[in-house]
Image 1 (cartoon, helix red, strand yellow):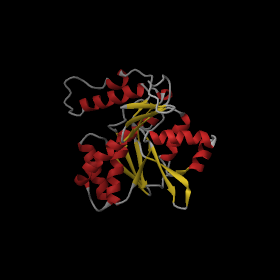
Image 2: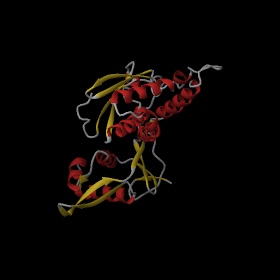
Image 3: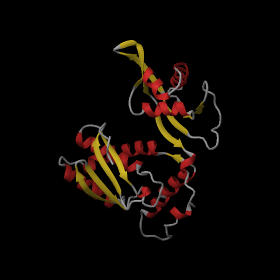
Image 4: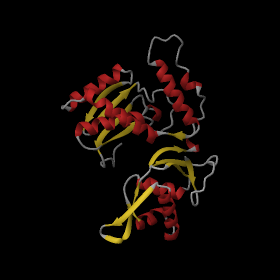
Length: 268
């Protein structure tokens, strides 16, 4: 059941032209529209925070922040535990997962036909129709300002876990070569290794984004999820995939940098 969290679990329809985050919890979906709560949850997606840190982050009175945290906890979006160094303090953490965001300012105004008209009836390319489906769904959502990147990333991670046994190699170069071969065989794009410190992959003719509108933001959440799962398994530790360039940012390729989880500062 989808609920909108305003006040004490009041259910209502989302207001037009309002920025909303959608979280998945154990008890169902929760929509968060309050900007203070959205800021708190954005911070908690990065790390855990104490109550005093959240107060400083929110820039609101302690009593006001306390109400926000109580409502978020009741909705199952966050949890808390006692600080092991001081039992009088609480440490808050995220329990729900961000699924999507509705951001009216990011709506794509271009005609959908501009991005779905590439398919030709009778095409002998078996992937052309699948590209048409993917493009149509993605752009239709973008036209409404709906961003599914978190969900697409997690879906990509699941695909990456399934793909890993087919491309696994001990040597990183051989591993990348197998991934590149898989990408080309399945018309996902052409991969080149552009560097090793950090490991950097360039993808040309990217299946996920090559025909998307230019928004100035990276769009390859699904590919990023696949690569994150693959390289996390390969290195035996959590890895991050930073998309520094993308067709949707106006480049003629996508650039993915593979780094150890937590080392993303300064990547460009």
